[in-house]
Length: 633
Image 1: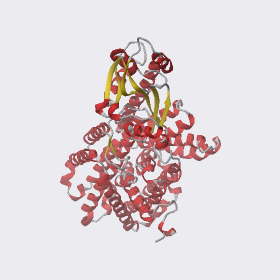
Image 2 (image 1 turned 30 degrees about the horizontal axis):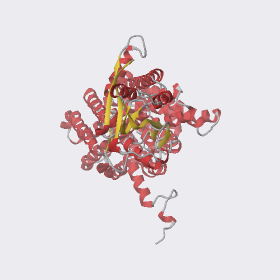
Image 3 (image 1 turned 45 degrees about the vertical axis):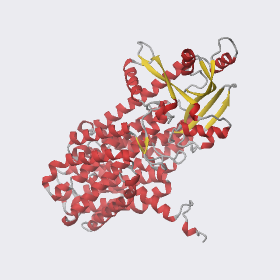
Image 4 (image 1 turned 90 degrees about the vertical axis):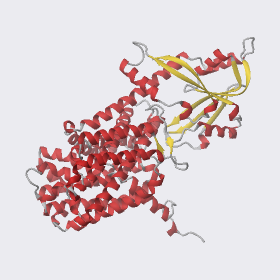
């Protein structure tokens, strides 16, 4: 039976497959932004609570929320940034890698912008689960006030179970994410739709003039309110970060068909409810629903927030892997939880860091109202960074003129900086938390990058040029080392210099193998490298071969699998007759040289935190030989 055009979408994906991607995008990509209605409007109303809520204020606030969603999410992320991909991958680090590939790695502004964006995302990954789950569970106060004192404990219990389940992978659970989140958005849409008629004046919020009028007359309070209004777009960065998992068209379709309409209806419904019944301003989301269905809605909201938490945790794992491969962090233990999907990973150290951070936030702040004050800075900061990187993208990749790039992005940049300024007002109320988290993470990444660069220069200056060494070793003399059968692979990050582990082997064992491979593993500024470009072999002498293995920053750096490709290149060896020689360095501090003292201590701590290269590169453990050396920094 032949297929027809009706069976396919425009890009060749089957209709059923495309629908599956759309549903999956709803669950993973929009889980975070879909939980914002739980607290965003409530927090925006709070500055007006003492004097009573008035109609123009409600309409102005809802108008601000509607147009914040429209400008930042729809225009910036859905229509623009989803097209600014790095071979199909999105996210701050992916965009940074693309720009470094185009403009070179020695661009300090881009480098630090990428570090700040990545650090802010990690801070966001701690606050999102705590805030979302507590907001959902607080709906139980309306079912039974006695539950109020147990919200932090229940939230912590849910978080412990969620983080404990990460090591098992998300494949089994993820199939339920999409349908549950679709049901959540439908419930939000219905809840809003049945209340819009409470006060039809709320439809005036669709006019952006009301948003501008509100800001013009709100005075200093307006800037404070902007910090809460920005809560409507928390999770927008996931649109871009998860581009590689679902593709542009499914993410865009999910937004326009379900997510955006559901959010609009819910916010309009909350606004109409408060216009008609000002007393509902204390918790307008849950008060939209009648008592008989309130408990199922709270349960559904809790499931939605757990899904949102899972999405941001998975995003943190992916970001950590990219940061490791790009050289921003030491080698971390990364477990692949799926045999078929390399995107499903588990990073134990990051998982533990996030869990500790989330639990500290839950018990430090105690409720979602207090924690909401700490939220926003990390999100707005990340968005400002992505807009700055987008400007360079327009110039370097798409070739836009300076004037055109400024014209397109300056209004957006101004809006986001305004939101960032509004959130910075919350520094003393808890906003310092994400700033402190981001600062610590950025210092760690900067220190590791700087320390690695220093060690690389140190080795390059002290080691013997490889070609000179090969010429001297290949000359037959009475002092030539004994030749032993088999193959030796020496890992090095400086391929034109003789690996120190090779020199130590000659010095202590006085032997040289029949075949000697100088292996360097490279990470490209692109997500994935095809097998056709994976390996490069160069015969340096009868006994020496240089082998370059290249991975993308989203690839699994499996050296053993890559070595199997050497057979196709004409280089044959038996893995069980091959020894892999690794140098284990012991860092020793030296005063007045290298890094400042405080950075030396941090770098040495990070060095001790890194896992074995044999584990990271998936080398056969029974074929690895490690030789230690002391390195002064």
